[in-house]
Amino acid sequence: METVENNVYEITSSFAIRIVNLYKYLTETKHEYIMSKQLFRSGTSIGANTFEGKNAQSRADFSNKMNIALKEATESGFWIDLLHKTDYLDEEQYTSLYNDWNIIMGVLTKIVKATKP
Image 1 (cartoon, rainbow, N blue to C red):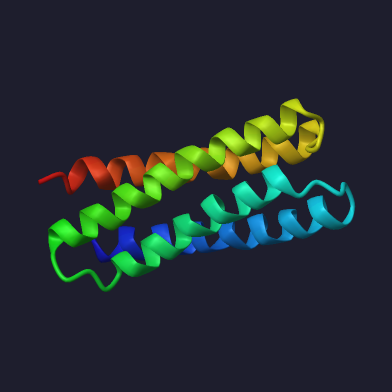
Image 2: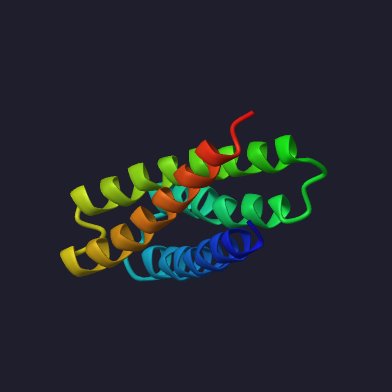
């Protein structure tokens, strides 16, 4: 499971960096502050929870952190979709971000199912 844990940390960390950069773009260029802040919070929380999971005290603790990360990822998908539908993200930006988000959702879903008590 160490490989999966390292992989999920890497992809969620990279996603968090994308979210931080997107937040800067949306606030500085598009002057959008509300939805971008919501995405900033949920999108970076995914990585924070997977990172915490690396030092979980038990399998149940690890599962809980991954479950929280999955919930935050689900919320992030909503904000990504809404930013696209309200024309703050163009089709290319949306597709790229959505593809990364979809990979994270798949990995986290597998981890949560595999570690269910």
